[in-house]
Length: 354
Image (cartoon, rainbow, N blue to C red):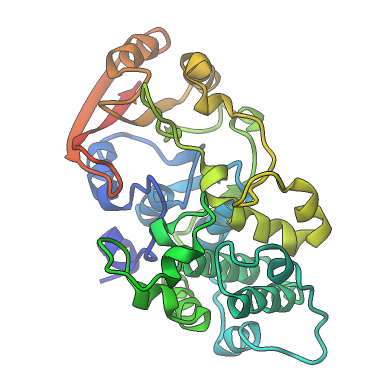
């Protein structure tokens, strides 16, 4: 059995990413498999589980995400067709070297915020080692593996709170796994590096990973299908991925620029030390309907597939009305599904517009 015949979830790297479609991606493909398309752009690709499934089906993939850390995951899994991390690469990355110049920004800045002092020092060392790499695909594979190692060691798998104390408290726990949190970074990095390595394959297409705002994507008429999975919003809450994963975004800045660039972007008035950023229109219910229409209008000459939720805002009925302004045929597929952090079940929806 070839990789492209394997069940997607059997080989895709373990992820605890908020809102990941990994557990329902096979259902998504079942609903799309009868559509006639070759090229697809995943305009808000996240950790690329849908793009990777479509890559397995030998489609040409253009992966895009505005967040830098997601871009690296897309470059590692979607654009990359043959490069892997060797054992010597991995050994080099996880060890200290006398001839490498190391910064101490994570250790100095994030003391008692997310990780222990020795773990922060390890992260500084890792980034210093990775700065010496010249192959962009190895760099992205290393970062993608590091991101998952960081996430798995965090309570709630997020960076939205200064809550290292939750790891350290000697109390009975109703959630999380202290043994997982306390396992060394080296252990988790090796595990995830091996997982990412096993997912690298060539589907015979020229695939690309982009790091753009959705409205800066060019060549809008050159894609057969547009897959659109926006941040989830309902009448009470919205998901701000930069808020949740700012530390991962910061590691990218740290690697690709320097510690001073990360320092200048930090909101020092808040305990988790997130990025300074204004509220995204994707997190503003007053602008959200307009944002959906801008995307649909931009890509109206391609088939449009939207992942949404039955309890989301705009409502499913509103989205159907909106899509029918630009498309003749609109179908809505539904699947019962409950996300890990959601208190109630709802229906996962797939809007298919042609």
